Length: 294
Image 1: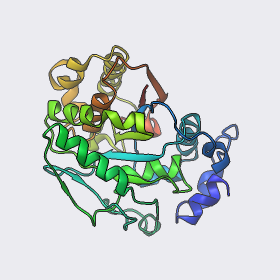
Image 2 (image 1 turned 60 degrees about the vertical axis):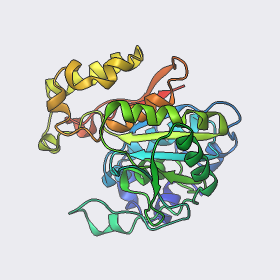
Image 3 (image 1 turned 90 degrees about the vertical axis):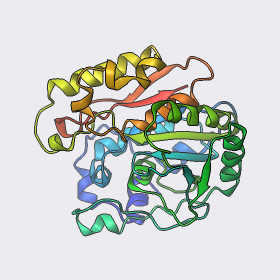
Image 4 (image 1 turned 60 degrees about the horizontal axis):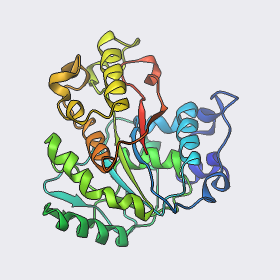
């Protein structure tokens, strides 16, 4: 079954929405993605997750699909989304659970989307073990399903919903605590788990539907690109003081927070940094910049 058919199966898209994409974007299939199960160290990802309507953007779905197709097949995925903050860090459902439709005012079809990925109880046990080893507090929320920051990119990247997924909350918005959480999770990379942060590097809702990319958004995006290329952890943690236009780019910064978890998970050595997806959502103020740390 191809990517379009899989997305339709889980309640997404009118097909017409995908057919208007660029003709040169190849359709990924489960065969394209499914042959290379991870055996070495997995990269760490941070993806801009758009909104539910991302799933009707043929170009962005294609970009995410090709990114997944270039990765080793993960044995499991640990998702950290901007849309779940709970203190202490909370582990979500370890069996398939209903999705969390944490958005308002969208067409009814977006509330019919399904993503029945298997739960990851073994991964949850390992995460608990790693957090205990660092004396980091945690709790369990066994009924909490995946929110749109988690399932939207996963539907585009792994539409067959066969990889076990666990979601972990953001334990507040302390930069060093988020980085330390990522550090604690770093051993998962050698165990076939894809540590995946999902957010946005610019997220000012006052500019969500305005045409044109303002200079402050370009400046902040360029600063992030430079700080990440240098893997300047101090700068990334202190972005509110060091980055240009930080308060405009991120009036609240929960969408940046998963990047700090990802950076912590990649910090056992200086990672190779690439940006598999760049550009601006609908030519506006929200950067699509997504990051791979390997």
